[in-house]
Image 1 (cartoon, rainbow, N blue to C red):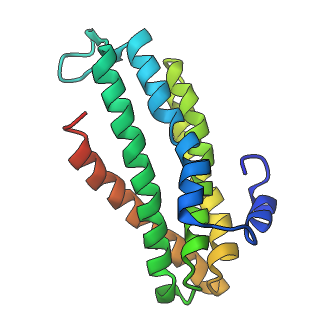
Image 2: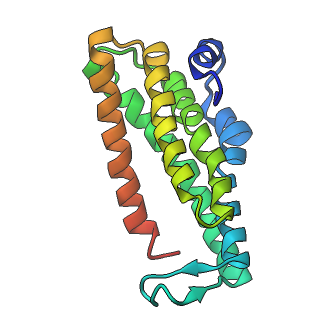
Length: 182
């Protein structure tokens, strides 16, 4: 998915996209990378918190860090499923084929580069690589949408853009709700 996404989407298209199967056998593992890396970074290097001042480095405690990692992981599972619902729900609006399993595959597999790149959170100063991977995930999504959801070529761009905007809004809402808990 990372090295040749266009070809990989053709291989993924006929596969099963059962949400339960994908969540348990794919998303659960890859979605664990970001919280695990953030947990380790918090323990080893700590974080500079703007609330405390950038000159102060805060280290997480073991249990608070674990709690935050588990919540982060669970939220990632829910967000992937919610994005799949959004993708499937928007399909008729853009003359795409409504297909819950393909929407789930698209939501799950397109996040692969972003999840994998979270290992760069372990190394201070490499945060820009995570941003590049997120942009690449959007590109991977852009390539997969026409293959899996089958909108007409002239509607694929607006469909992808609408889904990406909904995903950004969803991320902001989730961060506002869950952020204070962490």
